[in-house]
Amino acid sequence: MPLTRRQFLGSALVGASLALEGCSASSGHGATSAAAPTAAVLRQPGLLPFPNRPVGSDRVPKIRHIVVVMMENHSFDNVLGLIGRGDGFTVDRNGQPRATNPDGHGNLVHAFHMPTECQTRGIGNDWKVAHEAYANGMLDGFVTSTTAEAMGYLTKDDLPFTCGMASTFPIADRYFCSAMAQTDPNRRYLIAGTSLGLIDDTFPAALPPNGVIFQQFDRHGITWKDYYSSLPTLGVFLPLLSDPAMHAGLAGIDQFYADAAASTLPSFSLVEPDYDKQSEEDPQDVQFGDQFLGKVVNAVMSGPGWPSTMLIWTYDEHGGYYDHVPPPAAVTPDDVPPALVPGDPPGGFDRYGFRVPAGVVSPYARRDHVSHTVYDHTSILKTVEEKWNLPALTRRDANASSLLDMLDLTHSPEFLVPPLLPPSADPTLKDACLTDGVGTIPPPSAVTKA
Image (cartoon, rainbow, N blue to C red; front, top):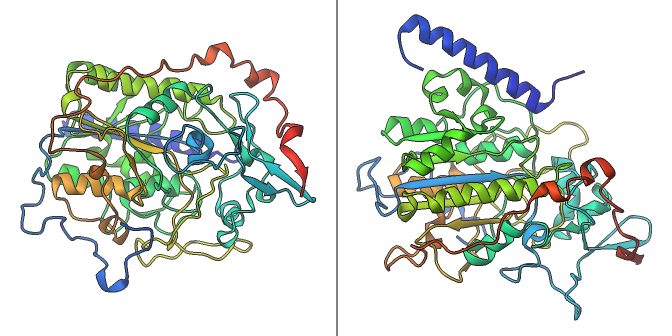
């Protein structure tokens, strides 16, 4: 039986750890707008946000710590469509979403509340499925490309902390994943601004020409950690796991909570759930993810470093769930085309993937703010590049919009005293759906004749 992506990456991590331990012992070292910019105004890789300032210089000293949490596989409408903020579902007089998709058999599947907090494996997120769901902008292929589960959505009763946080702090209702592709390509955009042409969860043999953002951090003395629970995102580029400098940036998730409590977080933190249980990817119980996100955010807000912290939370891609906003055009990151195989729909990296939930938690967060600026995962790169005046890695991050506009750094911080957010879900109360079944998907009431 072939290894799964996670088994393969986990094996690589173990192997790299052993190799680096051996090396350590022998060497003596310790362990914008919705439209894409025109070619005439495209910024290029290598350019500094502030060309007249020294590279690596801190441009936003009020923010000393940037913390990033990326969950998995949910669209904006699926998680935040009914919280009453941002561009969510259009609803009828009874508050029910009007969204529908044909099932290919003469029926319409209406958006429906998931019967339990658990999911099946009935939806998909690969290149083919995403492009069929997109349907040249018609967005009527979500069900026919996978199953009717694509029209399921969650509410604040399912994800109380996530929805409460998104109702209190700024959210972005035009934050798109970087490509109509799976997890690993989108996580490569997060740390490198490109997937190097890959559209699935396979592994590139080399690093991008300009490397990854962690290498920029090391080059300019900016501290960082990838705090992981089961697997580090660092490993989406396997060569990084055998690089002693990169491996030194890995730390277990318990260390994150200790560092947050002791005010010893590095300048940049990537904080990762247990991808087998807490990431919210199907077929997990999403409440384990709500619990994890709540623990991370509360650790940041209660720690002594809170007054100078910016936490960014998002999801890697839509997971196959419906969203009503067509992804707009995007700047291609480089000249590497998608590695398509026979049967893959044509396309390129000149269009974003679907919207995903995203927001900012910080004492400087703008109160009652919903950003309509177009973002993608490279906006996180742009944020750190603007803060520390670092060169762009690719054309995509060079031309991305920074998330710093979701902060107000000119006035006294609105959330210096952390607000009281709803308690996280207790997944143990309802996790029987993992063994007893997820309920009827779709419920009969969600299917009508077209």
